[in-house]
Amino acid sequence: MSTLLFLLLFCISPAWSKLTTFKTQSDAQECSQQQVTGYLDDCTCDVETIQGFNNRKLFPKIQKLLESDYFRYYKVNLKKPCPFWSDSSHCGLKDCAVQPCEPNEIPAGIRSESFKNAHECEKAEKLGAVNNSLSEETKQAVLDWTRHDDSTDNFCEVDDEHCPDAEYVDLLLNPERYTGYKGLEAWKIWNSIYEENCFKPNSIRRPFNPLIPGKGDEGGSFHNWLKELCLEKRSFYRTISGLHSSINIHLSARYLLRDTWYERKWGHNITEFKQRFDAQMTKGEGPRRLRNLYFLYLMELRALSKALPFFERSTFQLYTGDSTLDAKNKKLLLEIVNLAKSFPFPFDERSLFAGEKKEAENLKEEFRLHFKNISRIMDCVGCFKCRLWGKLQTQGLGTALKILFSEKQINSLLVSGPSQRFHLKRQDIVALFNAFGRISTSIQELQNFRELLETVQ
Figure 1 (spheres, rainbow, N blue to C red):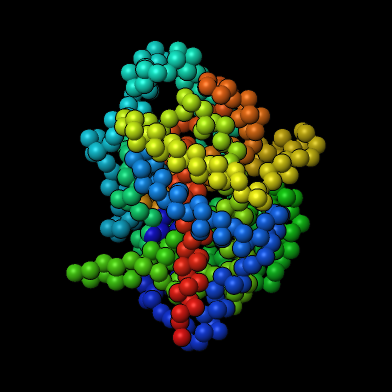
Figure 2 (figure 1 turned 180 degrees about the vertical axis):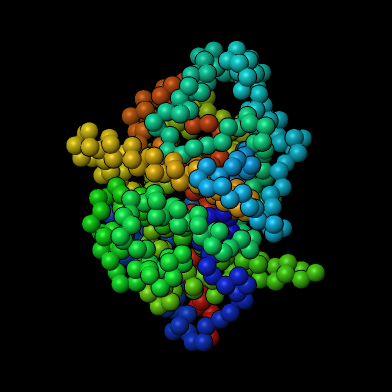
């Protein structure tokens, strides 16, 4: 189930690990989630509260929403060249391929979105044809929103939906799972992300860097440096590490266990999970990685809750052309967002960029540009399925960051009208909820792995 990012994470692992068990119950427990408990750094929440909230309340709802037509179709350009190096090689494995949708497979309401790209007068005309209930004020606002696509509020670089190379992909038919994409080419992606975009000086080495064998930071200087970072830069690193951890969990949970002429079987690979997160095998890194996953969960959960004023407006629709299902899915979306708002220990984004105004603004801009650069790196991934899920999840996380730091604009939204100062396009919304759905799935999969490990004798 690896995606671009997921596979990258696992590129250093054995290519064909078999599903294995541990020798003793104590060994299994040592690799279990019992090592990750208690309160998280830089947060007021504990791991147990997050697990219970996600697994019992939120996970079932978000999975149901993501199966709907509005959220399963994502438009993406997988043919963009890598902007950072000239290597144009692509993975030739069959599981790396992505099958785009035929035009007639896309719901009419979603297809109509692609018509809003010509001249401004045509945009208003097309929009009116899609939904006659929208006012002239709303139509004009759509034109204004396009002028803000490159504003300083955006944290990621997104594809031009109207480029001829952009195609709709059914995410349910192209799931994130192990593809076999691995090796130095894959690790080159993550190395670029960590070494060039996470505010780390060259003199500080990351633990277990496969591109510098035997020269990683197994001595602890990296984490001593990390503790001394300002909260904003430390949070940036923890966010990227959390995404990386989520990818690793997905790969381990939907790993190709059997590949024969009569059967292909994906499932949980305990060996892969252990290699990534066992405290002993990773010299303490595994539990840190999982704690960063919970940190990312809190951040994206907070973004969903803060977007409530945008989603609860009467003019907001999950438009696919089926009014009955559209209304039903909006109701479910609002249940999810209100549930997110009810979480008792939310991430406190106000603690970020809270210093002297000019210094805080400069730091926020540096933060934004670093993340935007990471979103561009996704076009360098050689596995198309990994690239698909990498682009979607970075766009989703970028949308979450945009929401977190647009509080004034969101709160100024008119109850029944649009806002020129804050807007989310359909692609942003699809990416936001699918990205959070991936993190939510990772939290649930940790429970699944713990139960599997506890049954090992």
